[in-house]
Length: 185
Picture 1 (tube, rainbow, N blue to C red):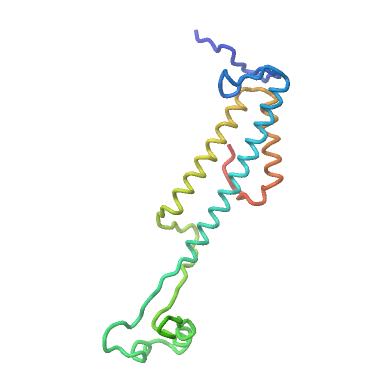
Picture 2 (cartoon, helix red, strand yellow; picture 1 turned 180 degrees about the horizontal axis):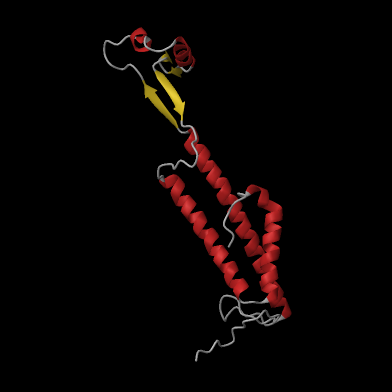
């Protein structure tokens, strides 16, 4: 027969419920209030991280979509400008002329800058400058979510309501910056 020790299986209002370790056991009403305030701040930080992650994802996406590629046309010897455009329509020729690039040598009509266009859920190539920060922020967000979950799992009413209050205040303050569809921990 296994013993559950002092772990309660029902909600409790005791002010001496340990949080995260036996060393963090409030011994007074003030210490309990401080622990509840800590949980409120932790939950607000959780919402801040979610909004920051969403903002970073938008920035990463925008940067990927605005990445430019230089295309050089007609670099082969003996090819004339008129020869390379002869098969194209007049509208294409005009568009190409409008996209001529000003270089240190003057106007260069052989160079075009194109922008990648977004397709639905197209994956971008792996980049250290994007994927490492994304992984770090996600790990922090998951860690905070698990800490909040452990606080709720103590089944202490004050801890539970503190987490809910922090999530409410965080959502009220910065929820508009977070993605509308996100995982909730």
